[in-house]
Image (tube, rainbow, N blue to C red):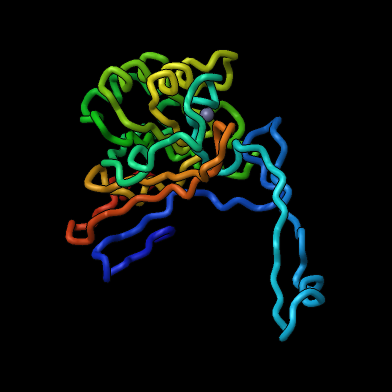
Length: 243
Ligand SMILES: [Zn+2]
């Protein structure tokens, strides 16, 4: 299964929930694609070092909102916490729950979809299946999103983090961004452009999404992943999701 890595030594299964970032990749229409090039090429470096040693140093030019990324409160609020101010315990080993809302049934995620689940103190990951359109024209069209009422419900239920495998957690056909405003206003961090959520069980996993410690930056790519104790019987929650 894609993104799956058994680590028998630690008795855990690791599941990668991040898209690969490469030069030229468009994450969001209207924002520039990343430019990744050599600052120091291997060839150039050979002139600098003895003994045939060579290195490569890349130069990256990109917006923070690239690939699978985390939004901190600073993304929305000038006085909110930036990435350098986020506590590690708020980003790692968070109890996770997956909520399935297939994009072909509805694009709008309402409180009715969330109410059956315990979301308190959890990373709530919305699995819509939209990631299958990643890096295609379809991905940037009307996207699965949460309503403002869903964000308010998650805030009131004290969810810890909210993720989605879609272009945006808000409805991009509108000019307002109420879900960002409500969640980031309550210090609930957002992870967008997740992928591979179909590989997760409904619950019983830990979620991690840790950005670099950047001052004055609100959003940045993360290596989002889940850890599942391998002692648990491993049954992906949506094995028949796309059948
Ligand atoms: Zn966002």
